Each structure stands twice: as C-alpha cells, then as structure tokens.
Length: 180
Image 1: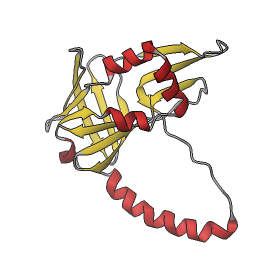
Image 2: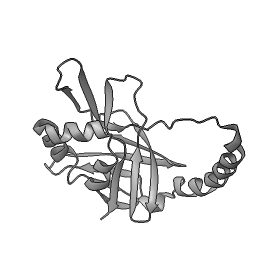
Image 3: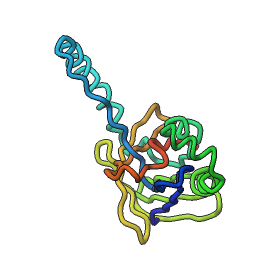
Image 4: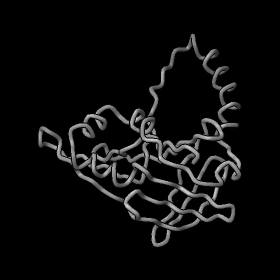
C-alpha cells in the first residue's frame, strides 16, 4: 500500500502542513535535569522498564485474527492542532472516513497480512513480529515497521517513527485497534 498524502493550507495561508496517513509520530518528552530528583526518577525508570518490556514484547499468538480500527482513542491521542484541522476540514474528515473508519487488519498464523478498508479496498501481504516491532509488507509497497503496544489481549495500538521535518506531521500519533 502506498503512502496517502494530504496537504492542507493553514487558515493563515502562510505554510501548508502535510499529513502522512501510513505513519504515526512519536511524541518527544521534555527532559528535566533536576539533580535532587535523579535518584528517584532513575529508580522509577528502572522499575518501569521491566513492566513496559512485558507489555511491548507481545507473542505472535496475541495478534492472530482480525482487528478493527478504534477511532475514539486514536483521535483522542492526536495532536490538538491536528484535531482542530480535522474538525474544520471536510476533506480531512472524508480521508479519515475512507481510510480509517472501518479499517480492519488480519494477522494469520502463517504470516498472512490483510488490510481492508470500509470502501472495499483490500491489500494482501505478510507480517512479522520481533520484540515489539511489527513489520508489514503489502504487495507492491515497501515494508512498514511500527511499535506495537498491547493494552490487554483485546486492544493494541501502533506507533510509527515520526518525521524530522516540522511541516510534516503524522495524522495519528497512535492507531488503536480492538479484537473483532
């Protein structure tokens, strides 16, 4: 599957913003260098690493089956400016309706991957999982690797690497799915 690109002119008309629909950006956290809190933060981080590692290293068996795009948490985790663009742009709303609402992902035990859209489009390919890195390849497209995080056995979300260009933003910071 190719990359779907939508360019919207900001209301000011000064600089267009481009959204890529097949990637998800990772938010950068502000770093604080407060020496008084370093030991506490280091301890919390060390403890968190073990619990996050358990969540981020799913087994392939967790993925088997069909998963449906969960729109509410996906929109809720969007950047606020993108949420506003979505509310104000019928074109962007139509693209979300066409390419996200009703989207289904199928992960077969044999590595088969199928992505289906509500408009009837479907792409077939293969998938693989290494740690928390999910790689999918659909016929005629380059591979895409995303981080997969399971909330529980019935819910996961995908996070893609972001872009360094400040005028290029990912539509969804997280794509949430629920087991069908």
